Length: 390
Image (cartoon, rainbow, N blue to C red; front, top):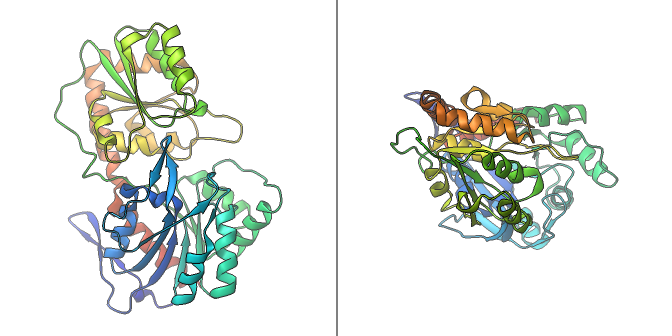
């Protein structure tokens, strides 16, 4: 595969941008159930704008942020919504008929599977590939940062896909190391999740004074640690919390807030969709990401960290999973599950306006590394690198 068939990455004033290829465009079939969220398809829009002929298969409906999200084309003619069977991100299948038709109707240069290599969806697509387009190279993706040994047949799916993939990309370092240990032979790329730094942008504001409004954005499930945050806020009357998101723990958390006597200092806003989530950050003085490790799960990236930092909101997060890599020195890390430590970090930002301002500035600078433009440029370069080894 000649490398000049793939979009090239250029640089203008230090910002990555994509230019069109001079020869026939690379044809890519990309499969990602999470692209049902309209705002998360910016990567595909920019990859396509670079000159790659991209077709995206995504879910017709999927649960994100505690609520079902229906596909909205939003002008994305390259996207093909497909019905799914099952709701677990690794235990679902696509309707095979649209995939069968796509694989038989044209020749793709590459299949990009934005799904875990042990998942049912990957096994399904690779079976269809074997029947319709067996010579087409493919990529897989992983965020799994705990080394797990899966039972058959998932172990077999994973082993087969890793040994035959042209490459894989991960959103955290540990996931890539695990893939290598499990047998990945092809190319490997660290590729973070992206953020629209144009939509998530800071507003002019002074440091908080008197009261600190703490934001929480995410599903209300045990390992996201919202209960730890409520206990932290309860220990200081100067702290208030806005919880944006929904999930099975909402009733229990509401009851806990009542038991702690938080009253109006704890506000539950329910599900917030991708369109309105920027408002959640705009109303917060600081974002708390109090995730706690549980058996079989660690935080794999933390998109809310980058969105908040791009919005000019300092972040206090648990030192768990991939969060230390994403937060780095541009935020504050505390011991997971320690409400006292979390409270101390939050109160510290209220008592020290200079620290709040410094973290606000550092976070904005750090967030620029996760722009969709940077992610799309890395994706295109990875396509080129992986195909050059085929």
